[in-house]
Length: 216
Image (cartoon, rainbow, N blue to C red; front, side, top):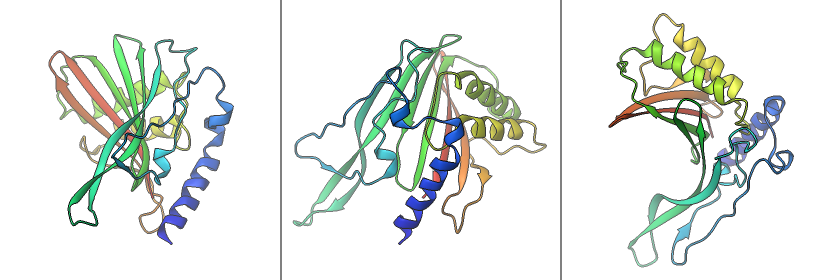
């Protein structure tokens, strides 16, 4: 029953955001497609809504270096008939592109308990401390606004995400990085829409990850 209700909410989300997004069928040749592959001997769990995307979100006419692939990732385990643990796998959609200011964008779509996209910006090192949350929320909002001309997600659009991040950057007490920023409450925890910002320093690079999700 919860799964049916979740799918109804997800469908409502997709319809409500249609003005800001394109469906897979409307994307055209500028958005490359990929097919799932199933490796022999692996058990796949692909009944998650987020595991169904088979077309890119990045417009190659805007970002010519854009790539799209569907990869296999571990998603847990279960006991087999012989009592031994069996690793479970699912598919994850991955977009990449080189964007402005020597920055690489990677987009990951996946998950079962929450349908969502993670936007990872890999950029030259930014020295600002993670404790300066207003800076990082503003930086996140600016980056989402920047890519909106060439990135077209389904269901949970970039205008909503940018607005939430911008609002957080102007708040008197912004949420700490890594904490969920509530955008809209659902019903009994189902349909909650939120965002999260994480920052990681990797050598001479800074990785800024922005996750935008709706709980199912």
